[in-house]
Length: 96
Figure 1: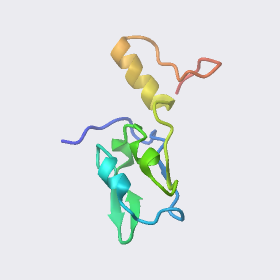
Figure 2: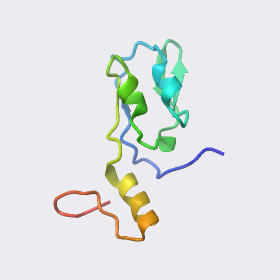
Figure 3: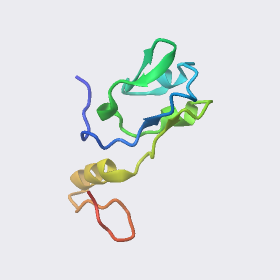
Figure 4: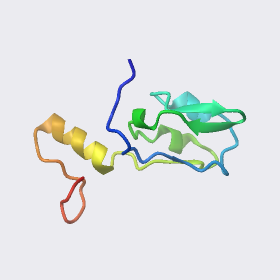
């Protein structure tokens, strides 16, 4: 069974114009978030993205971007693990 995170919060983005379909991202993604669509890559399961950043760091063409370790998903998971109130780390302390 595939791990599920929060729906519609992952910051993963694909610039299809920059993608040449090399597939390095497919090899490094630990959750099979990406897939092949013809000669290009596509985001198949955005909600399975844990925002680790492996795809973006390893893409030689800069076609993928992700704000790893930030955002509401990270804040809510950290809060659940620590028992504290969620905070996204913004200056005003607000979250979600």
